[in-house]
Structures are given as structure tokens and as C-alpha cells.
Image 1 (cartoon, protein in one colour):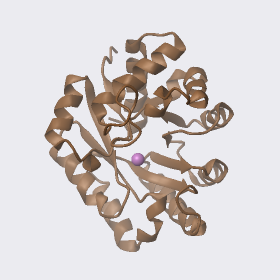
Image 2 (cartoon, protein in one colour; image 1 turned 135 degrees about the vertical axis):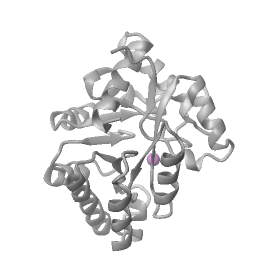
Image 3 (spheres, helix red, strand yellow; image 1 turned 90 degrees about the horizontal axis):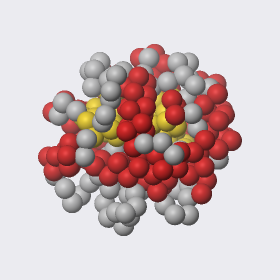
Length: 256
Ligand code: NI
């Protein structure tokens, strides 16, 4: 059971501008990142991320519509998600959720589209990869009411340690990325220190949220090692332990 490699559970490799997909995957492989999951955000991403998952053996995808793009939702997209999700390389519905940071003018629509996509995940027995920005309470309540299989990943978790524990009590996973390496990210460092390791996942959210020491550059899956190193340091355990447990967790929840 020695899983001495890393998995990037949320990485928009299709949005990285300065590197080709081949370069991204080569850098990842050189840094022992063996599997990468690419989420859809806009309607146009759905085919793009699906194609990537079909073309490259170690690339998987989540299909869904990001809350900021909730206006994109329609029956055709739903049909497309349902039909593409027959592929083994589609490992979840995402990224879906609520975002009250960018635009609060269509919260009802965001909720409606979020619920609809949770129901699809229930039916297909897939995990949901959840985006929650400044919407912790509503996101939690909707998931608790509508998600039926407890296969929930709180992507780019940004809540308090107390909120992390509430999510974990429901059986959900907490995914942490580059923010945990930021000097002033006290709350995230605390979350990374206290949550049970068997509920922890790693991600980059590339091209965003680049970890120290590359902050300011474009992010890429290869940089996930800095997140693992930081968490190992915070918890007083080895890099290998963080790699092994988070990889095991990811393979379990995503069935990969
Ligand atoms: Ni994302």
C-alpha cells in the first residue's frame, strides 16, 4: 500500500497559458504527480476537459457548471453531462456550488443549478467537487439536504476550523491548496493542522493560487509538492506520509 506519489484533485490545466499540456504533464510527472483531475467551469469547458481525460491516461475530469456561470445551465448541458459521464474518466460533478463573492445578483439561480447538479451526482453515484466562496452556511445546508451519497469534496476550502469539523462530521473531504503556504493564512494553517488526515485532499486549483515560493507565477500541478511540504511541516509528519494518505484518500473517494 505504498502510495508514494501525489494527486492533484482540482487543476484547470486547460487554463494554464504559459505551458503546453505536454509540458504541464511532463513537469507533473517529474514531480511525482501521477493523477490530475480537471474540473469544468463554463459550459464550453465540458467538452475540453472531457477530451483531455480521453487523450491522456493520467488525466481525469469533473463535469459541471461553476456557480458564477449558472446562467449557462440548460437541458442540453444536462444531457451532455449525463452522456459523457458514462466514461470511467469522468470522476465527479464539478465544479459546482455557490459564489457570493463575485456576483450576488443571481443567488436563487445559483442555488437552483447547484441542487440540480447534486441530484445528477446522486443518480450517477458520483462525488461532487464543491466551490464555496463566501457562502459557507448556504453551501452546507444545501449539501446536507440534497446530497445522498456523502461523496463531497470541499474544494479550495476557505472556512474556519469549526466549519471544517462540521463538514467532516458529514463524511465530507476537505481539499487544500496553495493558500496554506501563504504567510498570513493563519486560519488555513490551523485547518491543515487539525483536520483528520483521512479526510484531507490536495489540489492546486491551477492556474490560480500558486503556492510559495512560486507565488506570483502561474500555478501548475507540479507545484502541489509545496502544499504537501507545508502541511507535513505544520503537522510534524513527513512529506511521504502526507503524500501517501492524501493519495489513498483521493483514490478512494474518486474511485481511481
Ligand atoms: Ni477551480
